[in-house]
Amino acid sequence: MPELPEVETVRIGLSGFLPGRIVKSVKHDWPKGFPNAETDVRKFLIGAKVMAVKRRAKVLLIELSSGYSLAIHLKMTGQLVFRASGGEQFGAGHPSDSLVGDLPDRSTRVIFTFTDGSKLFFNDQRKFGWVRLLPTAEAQNIDFLNKVGPEPLSTDFTWKILRERLSRRPNTNIKAALLDQTVIAGIGNIYTDESLWGAKIHPSTLVKDLSDAKLKKLYTALVDVLRLSIEKGGSTDKNYVNAEGRRGSYLTFANVFRREGQPCPRCGHEIVKIRVAGRGTHICPHCQKSV
Ligand SMILES: [Zn+2]
Image (cartoon, rainbow, N blue to C red; front, side, top):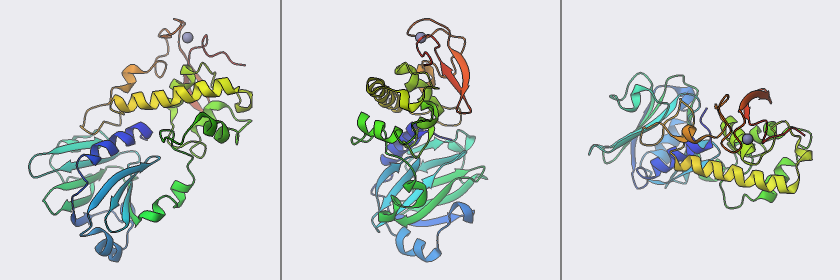
C-alpha cells in the first residue's frame, strides 16, 4: 500500500497536468473498479473540466467543474499514467512496465480522454483499486473518508491535536496508535518507525505514559519526516515510484527503517528489528529505551 507521502507525490504530479483539461470520454473494463452509474458519468463527468487535484488521506480527489469529483484509490498495484499528444507524459504508482510502455495494455482498467487528445490511464493489475464519481460536497463525508483522522500535513494539525487524537487510545502502545487511521490519516510502518526514532520513544510505550514534552517531539519528528519524504519524491517502498516514474529516494535517507544491523546515526549503537503491534519495527535500543 502506498503511504501518505507517495499519494501526495502523485497528487503534486497530476496537479501539473490535469487542471484545465476537459473530459471528452471515458472507457472502463472493470465495473468494480469503476462503480458509477452511466447517467452520472454522462451528466457529471463527460464535458467537465478538471479544476484541481486534491487528496484526503490516501485517496486522490480530482475536482470537476460539474460539482462532482473523481475519488481514486491506487491500493496495491494501481498506477496513473498521463500521456499528451505533444509527448508530455508521466507515470505514477506501481512501477510496472506499463508506466513507460504502450497503453492501453492488459493492466488498463479506465481510460479518460480529454478534448485535446491527451489521456489519463488508470492501470491496476490486481484490481483492488477504484475510481468513484461522487458529488464534491460528499467526498469528505463518505464512509472511507469519514473514518480517517486529521491530516498530519495540514496547517490545522498541531501537537495539541496529536495529543487529543492519541488520548482516545490511552492503553494502546504508541506504534499501534500511530498506525490507526482513525487517529491520524495516512501514517504507515515506515513513518512510525522513523518518527519514533526521531523523538526517542520506544514503540511499545503506552500512550498514557507519554509526557507533553515527548508528544511535542513526536509531533515535530512526524511532520519533519513526512515533509522530507515528499521532498525526496515520496516513494518509500519498492512498489511505488514518484510522479516522474522514478523511484523515490526516501529510503536511502531513512535512519532506522530496514537498517537493522547498522549503526544508529545518532549514537552508533546497533539498530535492531523487533515486533510491535504485529509489525516489523526498527529501533535503536540505546536511544529508544522502553519504560
Ligand atoms: Zn541511537
